[in-house]
Image 1 (tube, rainbow, N blue to C red):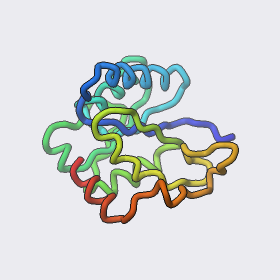
Image 2 (cartoon, rainbow, N blue to C red; image 1 turned 45 degrees about the horizontal axis):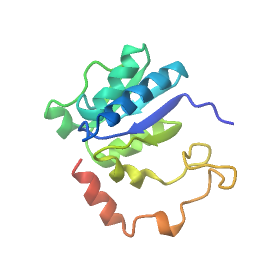
Image 3 (cartoon, rainbow, N blue to C red; image 1 turned 30 degrees about the vertical axis):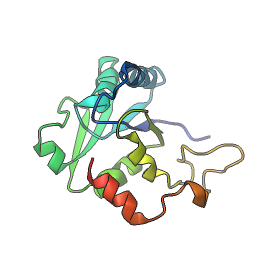
Length: 158
């Protein structure tokens, strides 16, 4: 089994309508630090992204953020992180987050559904792995988005 050193958490840039979303984000951050796992995330200081990052930092953990220039320029970047990567595009953001991480989690709340587009598996790094589904398998056609254009257009709005 591969050691999990960095976990990428996808979550919304808003707090969501339920207080439980904020509580879950904070609990996730605290659990990561307790397990000795670093956080990789979207680099924002707002919404659930900010909650999970602050929880990790408050507990003494390491946080790596990846944010596109356009979002950084709008002053939503979290500049108190261990490391903040500013990239040009959403595609670069997702690719870098993928390369920096050993696994992935999507928290509930506004915006997290669009991140299901990151479901392509990678040997030894797939969060979809189970004993009956090896890490190198791909998602069944019924769970994949119907066209690449639907994925890119939904990601552009975040």
